[in-house]
Length: 455
Image 1 (tube, rainbow, N blue to C red):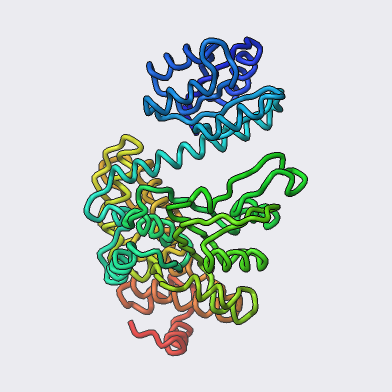
Image 2: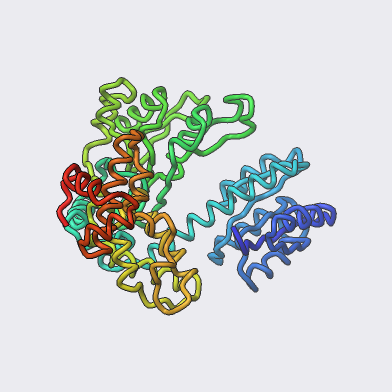
């Protein structure tokens, strides 16, 4: 969240000073003015990511400012502040377009948390807007790179099902691009102008996940000091991406099933339901069918999610795509870092195509970023690649980084590798090879027979 600009508007100098110091300490750029008129002049003169404004002020209050922001289509996010007794004004401000409100006097952590959430929301909105600006004939697929048949099949499926609300289950190993596929489905759909909201179901504690997904009403639990809109409501009209769906707790599996069946949600602590229109895309790196068999995942929910299944292939099954991906990532890094790398040298490309890529496309992306930074010339060399990737071509390295722990088997395999190397180096001269290996010529002959080596 670098280079965030915040405009503070309050007629109390002490509030302006306190917020300037507090927010400035987070490396955000803060400008403070004393009333809505001055605030509007600032907003018309330059761009601000966030406005924190008092509701009641002389000259122009928060409600009038919100009306001006709306009428002039100023792109910013507004948080309003209200003193005790002005809660009704704050609620009016929310209805007028404010993102959130804070009661005065407020705690340091409260204001910081609210600002962080607002900035993240702003970032997501602008990211979606930027994605829409980049829309071409198949823009939703631009970030999914590949000419191999497995990827072409993925592209065909995405284009075929994007227009429909049907639930999609994306499967594949970590780093294969499941979120990119979810975004492509959204960008190619009639919902592209609405929100794309993503959540990792395994990254949030289970006791907080229900509130995060469905929202809650004030007083629903100890820390529920106000109503909260959940991610389903945030994604209304758009797409909700549920990553790592296999980690969803059992009690929430039941509630998600109800949402898929009824197209409505109920916030925590509320008795009424709210209709929603959300397209659900789920993803997992686990075998959900196996989890169903082990009673770890509901069978009825599995079939609801698996209306359409798309499997993202691991990179090791589409090695022919590596040159294309490498060019794509070099282009991205040149743009981001201001570099001018033209490509990779042949020996570096051979190394990349011989590696097994356990981290898939994400690992390749990180590898190329490192290569761009480390390159001393116009092309990435083999020595610019991570050591682990360079060493992967060494059979001895592979031998001792595998799962085998048998001393007998490892020793025998190591002997075979060393004998083969010695014979290759001596061009098949067994006497010379035996000297390099520091064993007798007779011993070498026995080992050649034992290991079935014919050089």
